Each structure stands twice: as structure tokens, then as C-alpha cells.
Image (tube, rainbow, N blue to C red):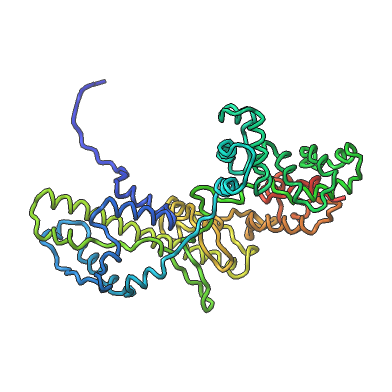
Length: 466
């Protein structure tokens, strides 16, 4: 065997993730609100970027920019003349409104108070016997549910007060609205809410000592312990279920978002489905005229290099945003073709669909479809859904391989069966599997239990009424 050194040429192909490609992938994954925030950040970083509103003069008239080709336009890989021409056309089509008229339509959003704000406001208007700073310390240590993980000893030690003072402050906090805050256990939380029950029966206080058995549906055991009939125990349990085990969740937390902005809107007009990509929250971007003029006058200087670099970055951002919009439209259009029956007739007509089906339909890779639909919502005539809702798994209907059903359809059938059962003799999971089989939905008992849990439906023992 001969060993030695030598030179050889070899041609290989590699996929290199350039910063521009990485940015395009990032933009594709962003929702409408996230994209709006991302664009605002880019506006601060890149001086060549500006919003279309900034291009209007003081009278609200669009500026008329020259679209003459600069001497070195042919060096760039982007046709800037087309970009600038389109930009000027878009500007001229904008609605011409005065600043006063524009201000009149600015949205005003009132944020809901947080739990801490709601409780502190009550403390500051009430006269409590305990020190205010101790009560404020307790409120500041409540979790999102309104519960307290500190003991009275912890409070006394941290606030440097006697134990009796700490307990007085805690008792004061527990009288605030909503009742149940400041509790250190589920039993204490529900017990604090008993005054909310009209004509609260005395047995209810004793029943709270058996919450574990109540959750497991062991009503017979509770009835024996309390020396009550099982029917009476069930009546008391129904009263307890009206109480709120997490009273703090009724209030917003810092930075909570309590609404969904759909990224795509699908509307049926005249029997035809129209697709709109919702990008109204994203500022319309353009290229700053002042910097464009600098390219025509600057020679090969550092200033020109800086402007060229930022110009290419700005153009790539505009291109990536447009590519995101086109990809979203193509994906939504393909989904409409597959799920037309669902959009018209409801969940029973939802068809099995995979990322590969859509990818082959629009001619892209599955990962592109995955990124385009990740954490995004679509508004349809049937309601607002996550994109992933339409990618429903399917299984054969009975012994036929030509017809298939989705898991959503099975869950709907499962819910309908349980809602119509005799509450005194609810169906077991095996019985539910048998009833689904009659509907040509052959799934195992274990799968029934899984779907039932996902629907938030308890076991037959807990569902049983006496």
C-alpha cells in the first residue's frame, strides 16, 4: 500500500444558512402581531427603512420621488428601480387624511387590572386593624390563582412583626374581593367562599374535609362518614362545584394578551371563498429618499458602502415579508381546497390532511408549511382556528380504506354520546368504544379514555348521578 500526500479537486453541494435566509425563515414563522413588533425593531436599526406614513408631506400629499437609475444599480442583485416604482405607486394609492382625522381613529385600549392592583386598591380605601405594609406584602406574594404559599410564620419573619399581627393581616386580605384569595390550600379557598352560597347548609363545611374522595367520585364513602344519604351528598357536591378554586385567574396578569388576531381571514362571498392575509398591523415599509439620493452622489466611500449594506438589508426585509404573505396565501388557498366541505357544513366534514399534502400542492418543502402555519390562526365562517386544526389525523372508517375519519370527528361523536347517556348509569370507556364502533369508528378503550381526558370529561364513576 502506497502512502503519500497529494492535491485533488472535488465538487460538493452544501446548504449554507446565510443571515438573509435565516431572517426569511424567522419572518415566515412570526404571527401578525409578532411581525409587527419585529418590523418596529428593524425600523430602529436600519435608517434606510421607513413607514409609508413617513413619506407623506405635511399636507398629507405623497412625495414624488425620482426613479432614475443610479450609475451602479446594475451591480446589485435586486432591481431597485422596480422597488422604488412600486413604492411610489403604493404611496399614491394611500388614503389621504389629515393628521387630525388620523388621530380621531387611533385605538384606545383599556387594560384590565391585575389581581394585585385590584386587591391593593381595596386595601387603600379600607381601614384594617393590621399594618398596611404587612397586608401589601401578602398581596405581593399571591400567585396567579390567588393562592398563598407562605405560612403565617414566614410573613411574620419577613415583615418583622409578631405572629398575631401577621395572622390579622392575612385575615384582612382574605376578606377582600374576590373571596378565596390568600388561601393556603384548596379547602381553605373554598371555605372562604361559602358565604357566597345562599342559605349555606351546615353540612357543606364538613363536606370540604372530603375533597379527595369527592374528586374521585367516592360519594358512598362520604355519605357513610357524614351520615347523610348519597343523594344529599350529591346535592352538596353540586353546590361546591359552583365555587371558584382559582379566583385569581379572573384577573389579567402583567402583559397578558386576551385576544387573538387571525393571520388569515377566509370569507364566503357569492358561494366562493375569498382569502385575505391579515397584515394590517404590520407597517408598510419603504426606502428613505434621502439615503437613496446619497447613492447618486457618493463615490466609493465608507458612506456609500454603509448605505449599500443597509439598502440590501432593507430590500431583503421587504422581500421576506412579501414572501411570507404569498406563502400564507398559498397555504390557506390549498387548505380551502381540501377542507371546503368543512367550511360549508361543519366538523363532520373535516378531512384528514397532512403537511406533505399541502407541501406537494403548493410546491414547497414540508418544513416551509410547518413554519408558515406555526402559532398562527385563521378566521373562517365556522370560527377562529389554529392552522394546525386543519391538519387532522385520519383513520379508516370500519374496514374501508377509501373512507377515513378525523380525530376531531371522533371526539365530537364521543361528546354527543356522553351528553345523551343516562346520568344514573353512565357509559364505561369500553361501552363508549362499542358505541363508537357502531358508528364505524373502531378505536380501543384506551384511546377512548385518552380522547375523553382531552375533552375534559371525567370517568363514569364521577359522572354518575344518584
